[in-house]
Image 1: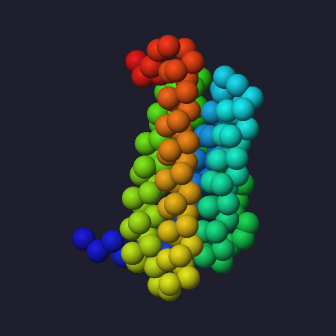
Image 2: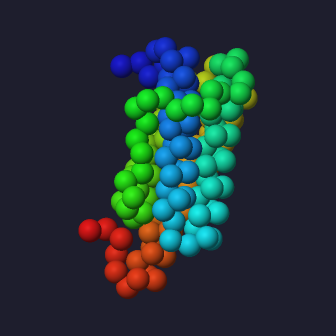
Length: 144
């Protein structure tokens, strides 16, 4: 299978995923047990929206539509479970951006996409640290 087939559609889908993530993470911020975690999560929300803006500009559409597609997942109200979901999303995004970067039509676009990949990696580490901190503070793991 050729990963580079319908590259524009892959970028469009990625942009929508970023908008969904921004909305989902904003909901998780409302669940955060501390103000510090809430502020950290809000900074990730800004990163995700920035990723959508970059991809929108690659598509010649700027800024991206602020409304999420109807199938965006919502937060469950369980902070730890939602953070686990966020981690899985970030790990999936790392793979997606690696594939998109391999197909990038120019070195500049490859640079932009690998830059986003680096952000997603950092987000996965931050979300993971949040789970670790929660388990340390409550003397119990977040996982059930």
